[in-house]
Image (cartoon, rainbow, N blue to C red; front, side, top):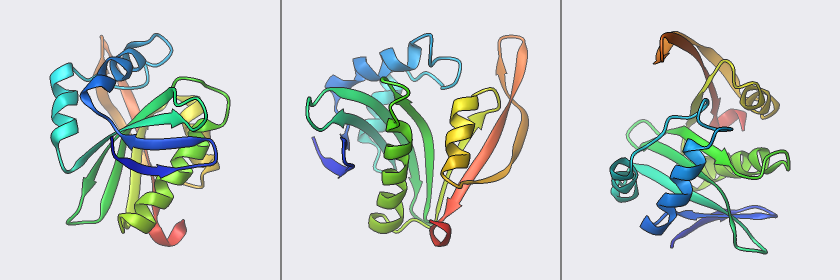
Length: 165
């Protein structure tokens, strides 16, 4: 298990096969599944093997219990980092803000990324509030970009550049 970075309360490491049950349960839970895509076991196994994808586990520094996960991709040619998914199991403790701030620092300082971006569904008010708190820039809205059942959902694109961090 490869350590990547840490915060005051949390440690982030690369995921391994044994973490996939935890990841899939978080994705499929009722409180999360409306806001994140759900990956299959095969997709997550491929993500672990892919050098341009980071599947990461967030752990409590003291108890060593898993607190969430991050799925992201990197375009090394263009120095762009995409935050595809983040789920924190223990909500309302400030873990999201803490971990995304540290993730951006890791991206800009260690990975030499120029642009950090993500998309968020327009009904994910907690996520939107967090990304605005982090001073991310709203780049635009992808209107009706995702079909969910019989409805189409909009996605907002937020980003931060290295010089803005």
